[in-house]
Length: 278
Image (cartoon, rainbow, N blue to C red; front, side, top):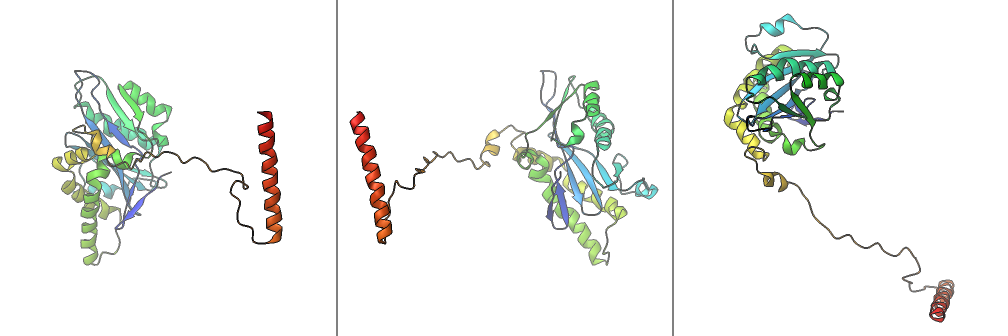
């Protein structure tokens, strides 16, 4: 299940493709951190945005709700030629889309960056990453897939830490400008025109590198992450006595007085028996 956060008409959702991370596996393998997450615009489309620690971004993969591809989507000059568009019945990712992203975007775009044999691909726990077919593709291309800890993307995702806030702001400004020109509806063609403009303004090398630094990944600084965790060590309070007779209350009537006297006599008899045994 995916959960979104509504901010200024734009929703951010946890990514079906999670976080992708290259880590140094040998002296011959370069260090390359790579993250991917979804940026969602209500009723329009999903966009997989992917960045890495050296300051560049992979071409996004946009998912539209629909059955077929429309020729007009690809005739827009504002849409970069290397961007991918996918369609699904509900506008969300699927197992098939996840595999196509891996084969047609991730692998070709990162092949030229390798200096060693293996790539470590760190993902979230979305079901599209856990299929035998996805795992087989990774095996065939010497990609080692691993899932990152649950509920940690808000601290470990550089896209969350430094890119999506300005991206939301930039895209929101473009939508607002259209609204001032009496455009009261954003369709898919409008999205394909505005979203590349927003990305070009936000996904710059300095912004991307600062996002990795803010998450404590590159340069590696775990203290930047740990100081954000609200961890307080507390000595557990000993549980109170379960006996209701351990703290007698002041009686307010004759019946309560007689009951308390009976309880005290019972306790005294127990004490005498203990002393007698000793």
